[in-house]
Length: 323
Image (tube, rainbow, N blue to C red; front, side):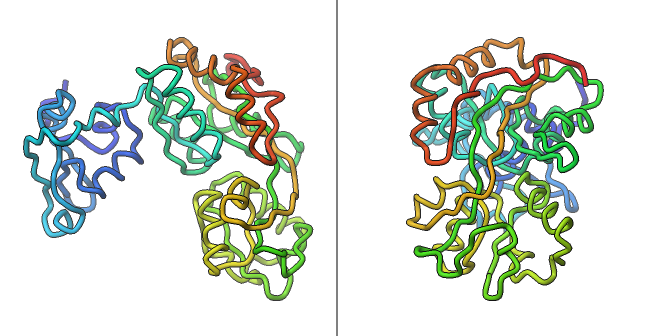
């Protein structure tokens, strides 16, 4: 073991068994002690070990954290320890409401198993899997050359790894628009209509790749689309911007539109898959998650979501093959 008492963000996340993104969120909320060294965050090994033992919790506010480079730790029986965030399965990948639903179902089916979810986008998810920062990712990456989903990207981004791919759900993506669809958005070409104030998804997300592929093929300059530069990381974020009047068109799933009373116009079907490496497949946690995926209760819950199809849910798309 290294004699250095301070850990990098990656080392701290690994010790706490949480994703790096959850780690940063805890620091932001002043729930995790950190020190700034230049532009980098460093974490004291002894303090993290104390937290894991449940003897102390972080206190303070985000404002106080900005005034000081260190967050103090004090015993506090009123709070739970950071151990509640420790995950058996760290998910880093594309946002989908069904992933959140999966985490809830898993919690009730196997209370001892924690699925920590960080929604960053499909490409970042595969990168996190390759770097060992996640046990599980979720992707929906459309290959414009083949018209297929996910496998070509896995082959390119996870070279030499033994990879398992299981379907989470098939879903429909489409226009999320204000009630009544005032601009009459019907097809992808309508993105260039006069009056459209678009809200985009972040770079590296499967939805963004699909949008950019369409623009490239259609010869539509991104600079000509009002709002193209404004990004959200989740489907609900897109819907919220539209419900709030900050935009009047975006692409996402129907459930996010329905939740905020917005209209939805279907555009295309896609396959959303879960991806993990062989070492995860061998764990009990993975087997418990797979059992939830294949359970009638979970599949019925998917079926109840507008625009979702559980026909392939829990089915192996690829099983332990080296790529």
